[in-house]
Image (cartoon, rainbow, N blue to C red; front, top):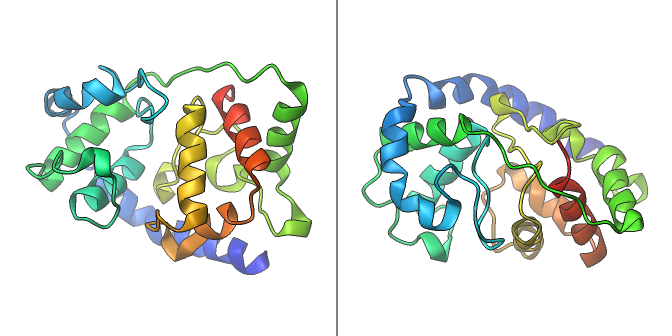
Length: 206
């Protein structure tokens, strides 16, 4: 647990300067134009019409830049996006990230199951010391807004289906672009109930 928390601190410090460079001189208006084909899956302003695809509105630009570059370069495999970013330059990616970052984030409604939400809240805010799970809020903030300087994503209002799918992918190791395996280590310790609880809590968090 201590080793994991130490890794988080080191990574945050290393990314502070790099994150500023990823969004420097970005043109959100140009990003809006470049992002038009993305609307079919992610919505005109980054709020997805389907739980299969993530909301991008209000997401941290630094996180979006990292993900888009790694998908384009084959570091992160997303079958639905195969070929979608082939003609995107680094500047195009920065512009698109800036466009989505400026959009108003989605506001969701948590599942009415109070026990499920309470379990999600506990994991998110406090983690589980016995299982070596750090609080999600340490990296994603108490409101789920994320930390741009460290490229930690915003999670509030995210689609439940997508959140669960992402956690399962990390747990299985099929998604492995998390620095030092931080998310893989955490997700592997989560049960299906944990994932459902976190996803539903995050949907209504703001």
